[in-house]
Length: 294
Image (cartoon, rainbow, N blue to C red; front, top):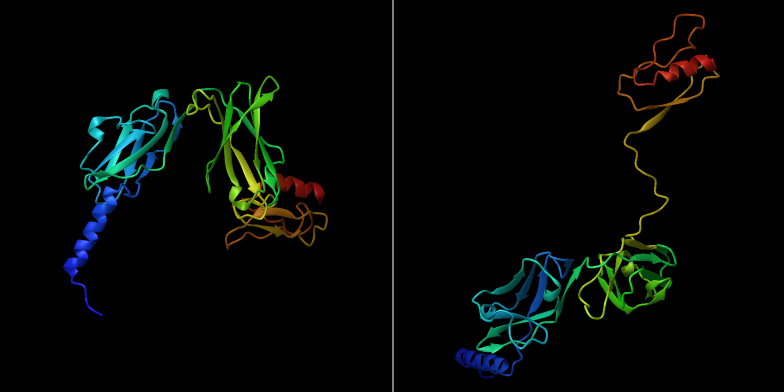
């Protein structure tokens, strides 16, 4: 078998990469938002576009926009391009994507990122119609209700495997509601849920979040045991009643150091030598109780 010279291998690889770029098949970058893509209104947000090391420039734009939002953002020398908003308002919400340049060609766009603001309307309420502790395989109905006539409600899961569901609302008791189904529920769906309200005209402007709902699935490690006892801050031991005082009840006291004072040898006021004083750690009422019982 003949060996292919390294120079020919390099030439073939370079031609392959050039053809790949000319066809516009550069793999898409990844777009993220810091600190997140769902933030309270007027919060600062930075959009981050991440591509390969060979990227020569980046651009970030809204989905459907023919040109980048800012001309200076179209081509930069930075390996990671960012677009920062000091305050995210209604006009800055929407879907964003990004691409990078390499070899004079632009890559495919990234998957879109949804930039949302919350707090525009009062919060709805969220409840579980089957309770907050459910068995695996059950059908769980989460009910989101608001006095505001929202067109749509959004359900989010904040931990573990994230979940976002959008669902149209229906009339309910002078307001609107929707019911989200988790069917069948599994251990991956245990976690903290919230819901929001929005309108079709402004789909990326949400209400305040509902109070959190903690859903527990039986048999999962994330579900705390209801019968689990609380840990005590100190150990306790039982002090037996003195032999000469059969009517005295046993008492509880905290664990004492090694040099533990002697217990009462006999009831106070009895015959013989006077009883030693109670340990200073016991409550003074113990002495009165002992005299009454004896």
